[in-house]
Every structure is written in C-alpha cells, then in structure tokens.
Image (cartoon, rainbow, N blue to C red; front, side, top):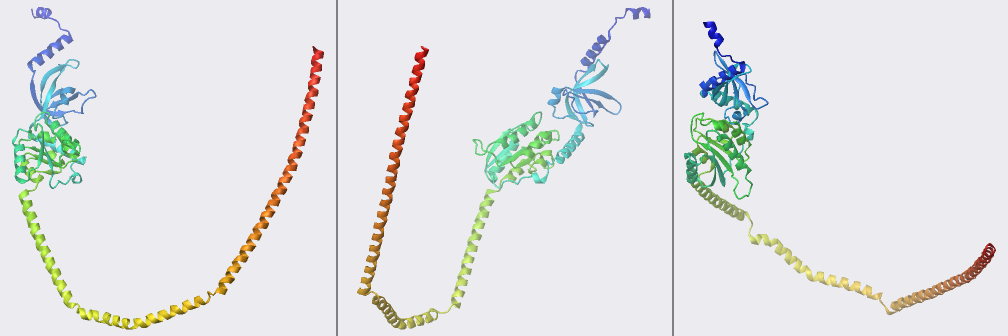
Length: 432
C-alpha cells in the first residue's frame, strides 16, 4: 500500500519544485527585519548590485541589495557593521539557497552608529577636511546672514529673536529637512547654493552661514554626519557656524565648520556683537579720546611756556643786527661815490676810442672790402658766361655733324631698300 501511494504521488521537475519553494518562502516571509553583522561585503558589483551575507554567532544568510535600493539608502553597507535589514526572503533556484532582498538598512543601536561615525571621522580627517588651516575667521559684523534649517521649528525663531536683541541683521533662510530621508542632500545643496550666489546679484550673497538644528537622538542628528554634508561645509567659501543639537551633541559637521556653537542661540550670539555694548564702547572711546587730546594740548602748552622762558628777550635778539645795520648805513654813501667814479673812468676809456677819425677809417676799410668783393663777383660772372658760351658752341658743332651723318645714313638706307625692291620686283616678274 505505501508503495502504491508513492507510485500515485505527482512528479515535479526540479524547476517546478524550486518555483514552488520560492513562492512558499516569499508568501510566508514577505516582509522581515533581520539583525546581524555584515560579512563578505566587497563594495557594489559592476552592475551596481551589492552581494554579501548577514551572520550572528551561529548562522548566516545571504543578502542582496539591488542597485536602485542601494542608491536611495542613507546608510550604506560596510564590512563588519551590525545592522537591521528590512526586506523579503526569496530563493535563488540556480544554487538551491535562500537569501534576503534588502530594501532598507539601518545600524543596529547606538554602538553601531558611533562606530560608523568614528570610522567616517577618521576617513575625513585623513583627507584634511578637519584641519585648522582650513578654518576661516568669522566676519566681525556681517551684513547678510544665511541660515540653513527647518523653517517651521523653534530654531529659526530663536536665532531671529537673538539677532534682534543683539544686532539686527538681514537674514536669508534656506528651508531644508533636518532629519529623515533626503535631508542630508538638502542641507548640502543649501550650503552650496548660498556659496553659488554671485556678488552684487539680486539675491545678496551672505557674509556668514549658520547650519542649525535642535537637539535629538543620534539617529535624528545623523544627517549631519553624512559625507555629503561634511564635504559641503568644508568646501564653503563663506564662513560657517555649526549649531546642531545641544551642547553635548557632537556631529561631524562640527569638525568641518569654521566655528561650532553649542546651541542655535549661541550661534546667533557668535554671529553679531551686542549693539548697545558697541554704543557704550564707542562713547567710552570718545571720552578717552577727548581726555587724551586735552592732556596732550596742556602738555604742549606747558612745553611752549618753558621754551619761551628759556629764550632771550626781543631787544637782545635784535641788538647785533641793529648795530650791523647802522654800520652799513654809515658806509653806504662812500661806497656809492666810489662806485660812481669807477664807472665814470671806464666810460671815459671807452669814449676815447670812439673818435671821428677812427669811424672814418672803419668806413673806408669797409668800402674797400665792398669794392674788392664786387670786382671779384664781376670777373667770376664773365668767366662763367665765357665757359657756358664755349660749351654751347661745342654742342652746336656736334649737333650739326650728327644731323648730317644721320641724314646720309637715312639716304643710304633708302637706296638699299629701293635696290632690294627692284630686285624683288624683277624676280616676281620672272616668276609670274
């Protein structure tokens, strides 16, 4: 009887049995959450899919993350990380084994998050993103402050209220999600967006950035530990203050920012000075300046009085110049007479040489030079005229001889041409 039952049992092909098992497993475990340690992860495959295993102390299960699911995951799988994987069980018929297709991944507990955060911190620090040399000084009094935070929380109200109390400034708010999926990308895009604003554009470029969020658990603040946010903060050319969580909360953006504030309110206090204190300081400096000026004037006045007492009297200073003037005034008439006599003697010596006889001799000498020069010019003109006449006569003789020889040559040429013409005509007549 048992043998007959076996003979009557339906037969399955291997593919049919594998498909039946696949449907049974997927129907029974369509949605599961599995906690385990990632093992055998070597990074995404060339196709973009990830293959690894989840294990605990006594068991191991194969796992796969498809390319599209891996792209949208906040937490990426890493070797040795303890995680909680959410997905569905299925089988792989080619090797007769079951596996979990993971749709979402999250670290298992605070310890795993801290380990991941510490590992990421070491990696980014090795790249130099946390170096003090990269830090920028905050502007003393920024004209425009950019705030990256949620527009609906209490954080932005605290920042605006604190700025209003200390020193009102223009504030630009870039609204972002501060936790959950896609929040890290929004925060990074906001930081880069503020840096991309042009100088002098319609939207003013901030002089200072504040990235702020209220307190929360490590999971709530995890967006500010993502590499994309840390790299955006490190690359910011605008000085940036990190104000994420409470004073005890530490995120990786705190190390990349130019300044860390324990709270968003403290960030507003770091951003601007107190206006009333500035007024009081300016008034104090003005009073000190006036007192210093008065002391300086009094000191110079005393120095001038002391110097004036050390100087001799006016009559003593002018006594010697006055005596010298009197002496020179007494000797001036004699000097004028002597100068006049000297000029008179010189004039007399010059006038003695200017007699009528001398002038006539100079005129006669000039007339003689003029007569001699005129005779020389006349003789030169005659010689030049004679040379030109002889030259023209020679040219005339040469021209006549040339004309006669040319005419004779033309007659000879005509005679030769006439004789040649007669010969050709005779030859033409005989040929005809």
